[in-house]
Image 1: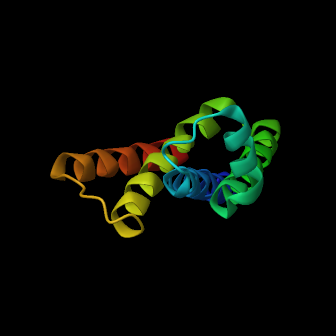
Image 2: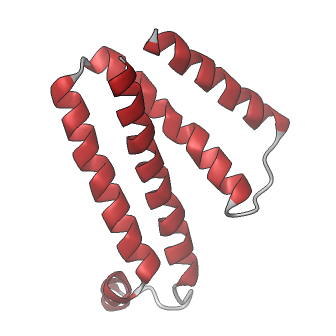
Length: 118
């Protein structure tokens, strides 16, 4: 079970990193250019979007490995760790405000993950 928890933490961290890079990449795009050509050009020239693709691909491949080697009932609840990492990233990297109720939710998620991992 320890191996599953470690792999789930890495997978969730990759997923969160991809989402943060996606937010930064989209924010860096010109707001007045919504044509398909511009979006495709941005996918090839925006480093944040390229990093997002790499991180999300890594998360997807790791998730496939997890599904192959562990029961879904144990593995799937641990994907909630991505919510924890997402909230931490929003606070620390993006300087977003996090409410008390969101922190309480993260604590509940962590307790749930601990119960599933036992």
